[in-house]
Image (cartoon, rainbow, N blue to C red):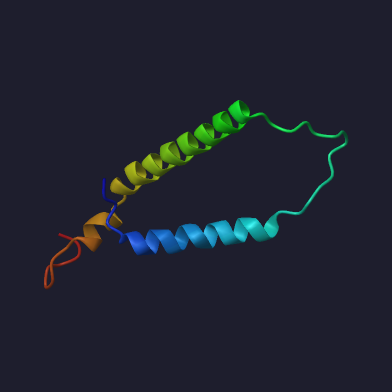
Amino acid sequence: MEIGLPAHILTVALLGLYDCERHQWRPFKPRQMLHEMKDGERMLVAFGLCAAIAVHGYAISFATEKLPWRKLCSRRRNQPIWG
């Protein structure tokens, strides 16, 4: 599914968001000692993360198809913007 933006622009935007989020996190100390996750739990967390990324990516793609600027990006040269 296409949203009218090149893949490299979306990749740069994603890296920018990741960088902003990474710099805002501050380390914290839990009240109690945390138990180490087992392999099965790690796999479930990884699958959950992949599912969340896929669902949000599809939602963004679906939503941007509904935006009016999509028509502006796909118009031909010398064609009026509104009309």
